[in-house]
Length: 490
Image (tube, rainbow, N blue to C red):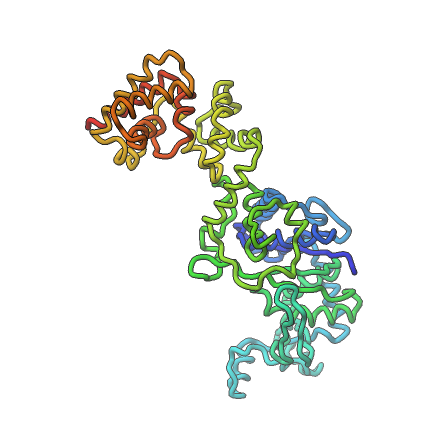
């Protein structure tokens, strides 16, 4: 079998969509699984929409996810350049060969003329171009040119059914005549995407095209163009196609670019781990095993079988993505967790950059417990912030539930028990508070420790209480308990 060569060829037009990154991941995994080559190519022929900033952002997003490419921008390779904007001469030359061989022809019809012909024949104008210019004589072409018209170039579609065995969907067939001859080069000489894309695939030796389901209707055009390219010696064969399922959002509608959950930057900014996010993207249409959701990218590459990708739409579920990421966070070695959250804490102004020795000591001490409660890295700002500030801001909702007038005596008793504690250690703190609040006041543990937790951390959820108190130190602890007690008196 020929060595597998996959490709990912996005347009640099703004944000990076989760569906786009999922396509890149599947192409990467297919290449890595088969020991093949992953080619990264940039479709930047639309000067009005493409930007250098978007191009850089695209490369950065792929690298963030952990995807490496064997050929493409900044890596090079034998089939460059890998940006369409730098390949104009290549397209001009191939179009010339196809025109000379009769696979392309000059077409002068305007949209209005096509519509008028359809209506005159009693047909729906939405059927589009009617292939009428296939048979123009040289004299007719000369007459159009004399009017000042410039022709587009169209591909002559074959007169038989076009079918292929899709790697994801099985047998797919389009009836003869269902796809009209299509424009490959504009009147101004600019080549169009349905032309340049297969030309690049042919010249770069792409064997397997994995792309979104939305592109499936254009596949017959690609098959016809490949046949023509083979005839003129540009293509060695036709690649295998696999059309990946839609990624849907709420209401099972295709996840649009306008949907905020579709923007990869949102997940990076919230502090998803690249491996956690890649793991979740992989689940959008594929699974490593029926009873397993969590795996590494190396494990994905080892197990990926494109024929096991589902043809059914894959719903993007933010809660599931968070749950997968949380498991990757918990699996980090503690040193890696500390290294990952330090920039987040520094960015929020909670620790210095680099942290002081005391800040690092506190973080390392609490890290194993905080790690169990971290879903995305940005959680640590709310989860650990109280350990790195002099005073704490109490969440109003937490105060309403835990700092009521009847909680004042709990906070007073806690402050009294800790103010003169002889040994400041987690076991001693735990014993002192249980003696004072549960035994002394007869409070149930939740009624006893809920107000203390909110007084010290400002929230109803925090790392383990007694360990947190030890790290806060006697002075800050007592001061916060007394400040919270004043809140209960209001």
